[in-house]
Amino acid sequence: MKAVRFHEYGDPDVLRYEDVEQPVPGAGEVRIRVAATSFNSVDGNIRGGFMRGPIPVVLPHTPGLDVAGTIDALGEGVDGIAVGDDVIGFLPMDGNGAAAEYVLAPAEVLTPAPKSIPLPDAAALPLVGLTAWQALFDHGKLTAGQRVLINGAGGAVGGYAVQLAKGADAHVIATASPRSSEAVTSAGADEVIDHTTTGVSAAVTEPVDVVLNLAPVDPAELAALVTLVRPGGVVVNTTVWMPAPSDQERGVRGIDLFVRSDADQLSQL
Image: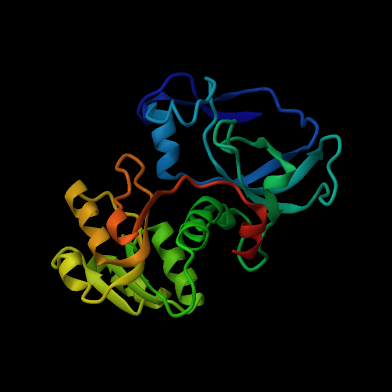
């Protein structure tokens, strides 16, 4: 079969399109005929060698953490899923990914693919959708009536986060550029701050319960976000190279998010 792999860390030039052996599923695994994968920033960071500590991959490595495809073969002990089923999933970060004709996946990370969109399009959902869900609800504990600031709402995770927060009946404040402000508003934001012309700290005039930072902002700007949070609130941060700020005196927690695979959450998304 064909696969995209890299044999050394580096920029996109290290990627090779080459022939590899078709994998055979082991116990608890399935083989998926890939319809599509996606490219996320973490894929680039893994390929560049910047994640060798938390995500130790074996070279040569096939990227592609998201997968949408059709079950092609079952390993021993797999039930509740059948050959021919269309599925999506967020693959283990330290294993081979879905930039190939076929990929192995633990059966437990997969969920039925949505039927409302083409199967290849569904590959764009798992990582970004799970990141938004886990940030808001697992870590932010967001509930109805609370106020949430989503900093960097114009990206893929931000779009899902706005929809999920609004669906939870929260008051959603989002930062976005003029290019993406219309999409963010359509997703459900109650307030949209143009971060290219307005300081976020100055624009948020009432405390929020949760800050979700998705933007690669200056460290000083990230630190300032904690001042917007009410006592007992939380700052959830996805830019892992800058630790989430906290304020112990006011009981404001800072949490750095490392997304995990969760088939149940993915099925709800």
